[in-house]
Image (cartoon, rainbow, N blue to C red; front, side, top):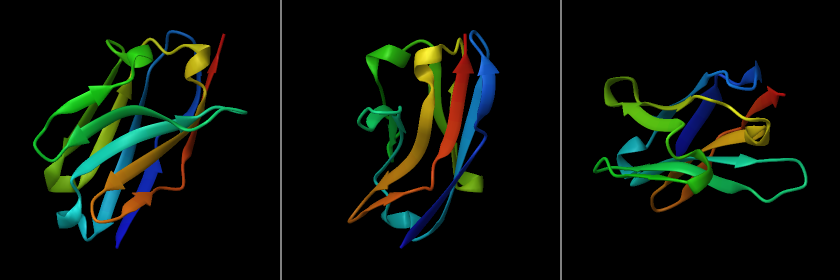
Length: 114
């Protein structure tokens, strides 16, 4: 099993920045891809950014150039640096890992005020 714990959400004004963290533990050797998803009220959960074991990244068009996904292997932690935040970035952000099974964190709220 893999355990994922997010942190770093909060309230920020438009144009501001936040950094989310996702600490992984357990069978992390089984993880092939890690990613950040978000879910806005009344909307489906969507992929924000993903990072493969080999270091390849993928971003939603809406966040390209503003968000950066990264990881610190020594700390078993993945990050999402979010800059130039917009009100439409508001939502619950979830950490996800993909391997033989999918695992999800509990989510962290990000609210961007206009």
